[in-house]
Image (spheres, rainbow, N blue to C red):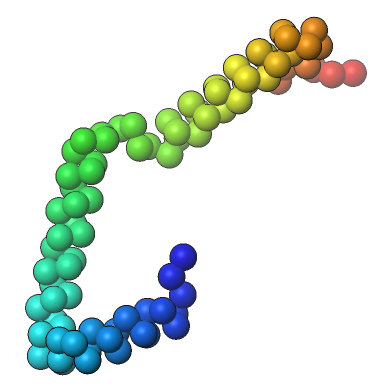
Amino acid sequence: MIGPLEIVIVIVLLLLVFGYRYLPSLGRKAGTGARELKEGVEEVVGDKANPKNLARSAGKGVREAREFRDALTGKETPSAAEPTS
C-alpha cells in the first residue's frame, strides 16, 4: 500500500521533472488512461469479478477441500445444515 509520504515524494519528483505547467495535462491523461484500462478489464472479466460470486466460489472450494480431507482421514465434520447438540 502506498502511504502519504510516498505520494508526497512522487509529487515533488514530478514537479521537479515536468514543472508545474505540465502536471494538469499529465493528470488528465493518467485519469483517462486509468478509466480506459478499467473499462477494458471490466469488458474482459465481466461478471467474474463480482465480489459475491468470488466469495461464493471461494466458500465452495473450502467446503470441497474439507470434504476431501474428511474422506481421506475418515472423519466427519458437521455441516452447516445439520444442527449440533
